[in-house]
Length: 98
Length: 464
Image (cartoon, rainbow over all chains, first blue to last red; front, side, top):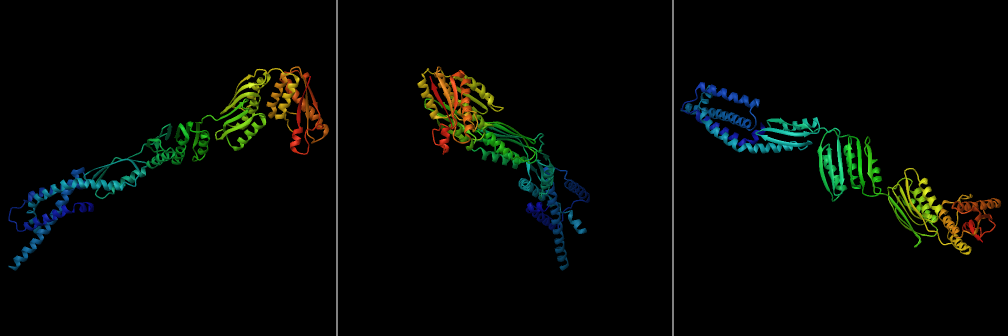
């Protein structure tokens, strides 16, 4: 894992920044979110992919691509969470000030 | 936490650029990652001894195929690959190097080429043997047809290296190790090659048995007696300086009228009993008027002209009989045409001339003719045959050493021994009169060894 992080750090940082930006915007975004049902399906899909990656049943290059995708997605979610949390802090401080 | 869950429903728009980022990452990192892992895997295996190693990488999965020389080596190599950081799965296609039974290794020597074939236990041993072959036979093509196998006998490397060192001594041939048995066949480059190889093989590691079928060029010793030039030419080989001196000395004693021309060279490889056989054969050659003696390995070839019929027959019969077991004699003896008859005075002169060049010798204190005098005796016999009507007194003399009566008897018995020799040649006994004077008629002073030697003599006195 350390080897992958060292080798792919640029792409992982990119995913983190992308997640951070998305999370930052999501707090004040007025558009439609994903429905609970879709969210559940998506969670099941991601869980299945994680199981496939952990059990290493996907061979060769595709297996590597799956690992890469899941790692980038996980870091994207972390970026989103950090972004949304920080933005929420900023928004609530502004509301309290006004 | 609830807020985080609420916001997460709005995180989806970023997934689209994330997917694009992922595609870009897949596009740009797959090949470099595979290259990097290949290099790391190869590096991790550099201390493992393997054959036919191939590493192919798809993503982070390694397909590792190799032949190991032991189960321990195989599992250790596999563990090294599995421990490479970044490797996800190892597809194990390793196997053990096939076991050779029997374990056969061969070095074949041709005139312009050396071929190493059969099995070698390890790559490093194979390379060492090739290097040893290059050092041994410089400037000759070395062909490597060795394959790697398990099951080598103990101390194989030492045994094979020693044998590679011997191929330089071969002209053509083959050296084989089959388990613990070493076989050598072929022809040695030089005289003594077989012996040199046999000596080197004594250093083979314990437990190896050897069948040495190396042949060497024939070991040739040649003597040519030329009566016109009055020379005795010795050519060919003798085993060492001691035998050399012994043979030259024997030639000096047996050939009293010829100059010995010594062109002998020392070399290993002489057959057993060489010196005694050559000395014996020189005795037969000394009886010929002209002739050649060739000793080739264990075969004695004597050709030439005997001085008279009986001598020819004796040489033909006695020489093969006197050789040690394993030796062969081939004689081509003809008889020199009888010389013209002469009268008693000339006959006496011929006897005197012959006895001035050499003297009939006996074993010390006995009346047995010395084998070295046989050539002279044949010449005396030939001379006696030239004056068939003459009566000849054979007179024995001794030096002054010892008792007078003993010397008297000894001189008479010695004279009789010479008469017996002449009679054996086919002449009537009544032509010869043996006489002995003991030490009564010295021709030199008896106070020096030289003088005594002159006094110990046989005289031939021709009577009408």
